[in-house]
Every structure is written in C-alpha cells, then in structure tokens.
Image 1 (cartoon, protein in one colour):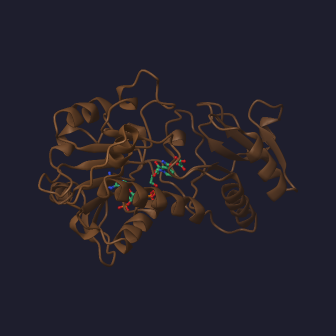
Image 2 (cartoon, rainbow, N blue to C red):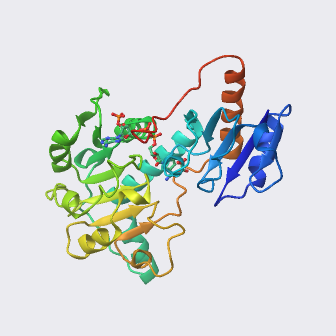
Image 3 (cartoon, rainbow, N blue to C red):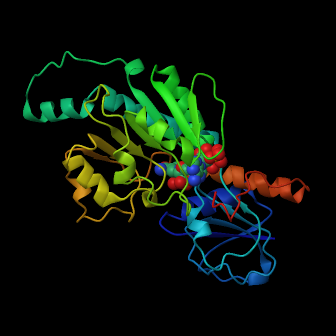
Length: 314
Ligand code: NDP
Ligand code: OXD
C-alpha cells in the first residue's frame, strides 16, 4: 500500500521525510517519481497537478495537507473517493494568534506608530478605544473561526460571527445565512474572514459588502482581515474602497494570485498590511502525523474523520 505525496508550491522533502518516519511500513513516493498507478492507495495533496490523480484504480482516499480543500475540489478529474481535510490543533492555534494579533494592531494603531518611528516623529494619540468598544465580526464559525472568536472574546472585543447554519457560542452573537448577513455587517468595525472558498463564497469580499459595514465605529472606518482564501476577495474593490474611505484598512494573508505579483498595487498601498499566506502554516510534523493517524485508523476499520462534502465544497 503506497502513499503518493503530490505537492506543488511547497518543498516536498520535509513531507517525504515525515511520512517515511510516521508510516515506516508503507512505500512513500512523490509525484514525478516512478510508480505503478495500481500500487497507490492514498494521496496526500497540496495543490496537486489537476487531472494527475485521474487514473489510480485502487485509490482509497485523498488527504489534503491543508485545512482548505479548494485546491482539490477545483480538479475537474478528481477521483470519487473520500476527501479528508486537516483539522489540527497547532494550525488552529496559529490562526487564532494571527487573528487576535491583527485585531490588536488595528485597535492599538500600530501601523501609525510604525510610520511615526520611520519618520522619527513623536505623536502621542490620547484617544485610545478599549477592545470592548470595537465590534469584530467573523465570517465563518468553523474550526478556525470558532476558536478565533473565543480568543478575541478573552481579549475583550465585542465579537459576533456569521455562518451558513445557526450556531450557539457562549458570549458571541451569532448570525446565519444570507438573510442575517446585513444585520451582522451593520454591527461590524473589523471584519475577519475565515470562510472556505466555494462557489457560494467566491468574491464575497466586494464593494457591496464593504459598504454595509458599520461607519460609526471607534476606528474611523471599517477594517477587514482576510486569512481565508484570495478568491474570496475582489482586490480592485479593496483598493478602490480604501481610496474612497469605504474601508479604513485591509490586512490580507491570501491573494487571487500567489505569490502576490510585484505589479500589484496592494504592495504599496498605505492602508494594506500583507502577510505571505502564512497566517497558519501547515507544519509537516503535526500534519503528517495526523495524516498517518488517519490512515492507520482507516486500516483498522474506523471511519475517516473530517470528510469534505465535494458538492458543498468544504
Ligand atoms: P470549516 O469548514 O471548519 O469552517 C467553515 C465555516 O464557514 C463554517 O462555519 C461554515 O458554516 C462557514 N461557511 C461556509 N460556506 C458558507 C456560506 N456560503 N455562508 C456562510 N457561512 C459559510 O473550515 P476551517 O475553519 O477549518 O477553515 C476555514 C478556511 O480557512 C479554509 O477553508 C481555508 O481556506 C482557510 N485557511 C487559511 C489558512 C492560512 O494560512 N491563511 C490556513 C488554514 C485554513 P457552517 O458552520 O454552517 O457549515
Ligand atoms: C490551509 C492553508 O488551507 O495553509 O491549511 O491555507
């Protein structure tokens, strides 16, 4: 029983090393190496080459090496076997660190102080809102959004969240579905996006949505933080909305094209903070161990955990 490791965009060697260590009884091959298609029972994928998994007659499952599975669902010739995604405590904690840090950076105006330091200018801003005066709205209340809202709450932020199905989370106001989206946006000063990229969410972060965010908040205009996927945002709208004051600031970890092209105006816009799609990096030690555990459980007759619905897209 062989595991095929099909990775594009990341260095494959740490993954091969971990899989060989965690699954010593299995043959581990990387995409591009010689193998018999009939020997492949499992694929571990991050952005595998589309159509490259179409002819694996004994395939049992595709295991995503990331929490997001849009890279898999987008393959027009994806074999119809269970798709299993990563749910990992390490990754979840990394994402919550990112979200809390960037909400605090907006709250405490750290970008303004960075600019002042570069200019050698001392300007002591006395109007300092408290976290409880800032309304943070989380798009997506799944594994990642659910953890982040709880940690934002601990920091004192006034937190709400929006998801597809209704949720009950202590201390958090929750909204669900299209019908409640406007009410959620209307009470949001910092909008954080941890949605998956699906046909229903593509392009959701656009001018129409930004125009519905609260305009009476303590930041002097709404801010957005997107660590979901680049396909969720309309980048021209972000720039235009920052320029005309519809948005005050944007923190972006993900982009329509990655790496972000040198020609993108996002790089130099003063309202934009950029991180290189590493809000919560997939750690080979943690993720390969969790994939190996899934394979072991499957071979012991247990059901796969964290199966994706390919029709809904997450
Ligand atoms: P989950 O599947 O656990 O949660 C997704 C959430 O989004 C759920 O609450 C779901 O609602 C909600 N949702 C999905 N579609 C809609 C919709 N159409 N309308 C309203 N709500 C919707 O995913 P995770 O929390 O594990 O991950 C979220 C995303 O984060 C990943 O898909 C990935 O793209 C991104 N990610 C980014 C990383 C980075 O480093 N930047 C790292 C890891 C992940 P419901 O609960 O009702 O189903
Ligand atoms: C993921 C990611 O989906 O790193 O895990 O983006």
